[in-house]
Image 1 (tube, rainbow, N blue to C red):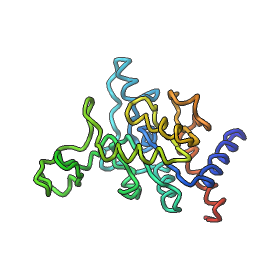
Image 2 (cartoon, one colour):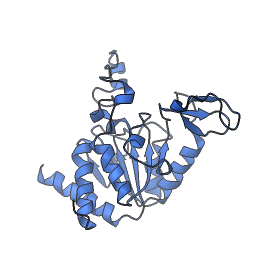
Image 3 (tube, helix red, strand yellow):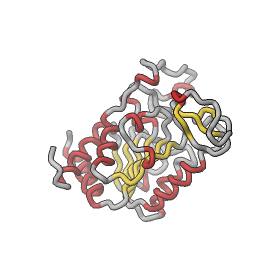
Length: 235
């Protein structure tokens, strides 16, 4: 690891240590190392589409994909009491699979393993085999398609936590799809420090207080390890 990267990781660890309200925001880029495609990366779904190429085939079934070190680093932040809230654009269920608690997570674009009630908006696992919600409403896929509104509760919680944050880490997102991408703006308005970890450019790069172009697993697990040392939690 070069010296400049090591210094930036140390800074991120220090900021996490000092933070009283850490919010993490993830996009498809956090799941690429689990074998899932991103959207706007060099070989992403939309990038390939723009070149007239079909999406790359997924190497294994969705339900057999496992969380990677990036997901696990965020779960570690939860375990040591540092994570206040996690906002995700992903539908792959990997954050919940990694051990993130339901109440700390907003899945803005839904989850492939869950159904949502069209009436009360509650979600239940597909594996439950239900077609009707307890409230009597019908259940449909929770995954948000183009043109559909984002789930109100998740959106409201995301805005609320972003506006309370003092450190906002955006990992693996091009930060162009709104209203999800409005969250860093909300955090900046609240006076939060903004750290971006993404291999492609984002519209927020010029506002970021710390910018990493490396992969998430190169940055976040190391920063969390350094944070634990600062907290006196030795491995």
